[in-house]
Length: 171
Image (tube, rainbow, N blue to C red; front, side, top):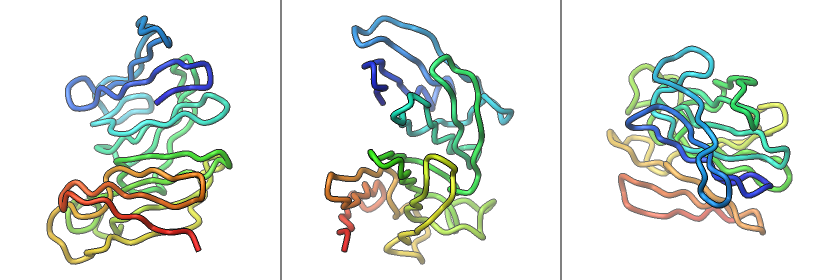
C-alpha cells in the first residue's frame, strides 16, 4: 500500500508478522508488529490499505481483526466487526471493503460468520453491506481473498480457491 506522500507499506505476514515501511525511493523507514494477539501484534497480516489521512489499516487475518496505525506505527484501534479479513480496499469516499475468504466452514472458530465482502465506513468502522460468498456450502476457500473497487464503484473479488475474479456491478 502507498500513503499520500508515496511511502510504501509491505505486509511481511507469513514469516515475521509485521508491516514494513519504506520511503518512495525504497529506503527502509521502520516496521511495526510482532507475532501475537495483543494490540500492535499480528498473526498473518495479509492486506494493507492507507486512507487519505495516512492511517494504515492492516488485515490481521490470523487474529480475525483489522488494526489501525498512524504513520509512525502507533496503534490506534482494533476492529473485529469485519470478520476474518484477507484483503482491504479504501475508496476516495472513505468506504472500506473487506474480503473474508476463511470464516464459517473454513475457520471453525468463526462458524457464526459468513465468508464474503463486507462494506463499511473507514471513518468509524460501521459495517453497512455484505456480499456473500458465491458458494456458501464450499468446504474450502471460495470467497474473495483480495478486493478492489473501480472509479464507478464496481467491486472486484479475487478468489484464490476457485482461481477466479468476480465483478459485482454497482446498480
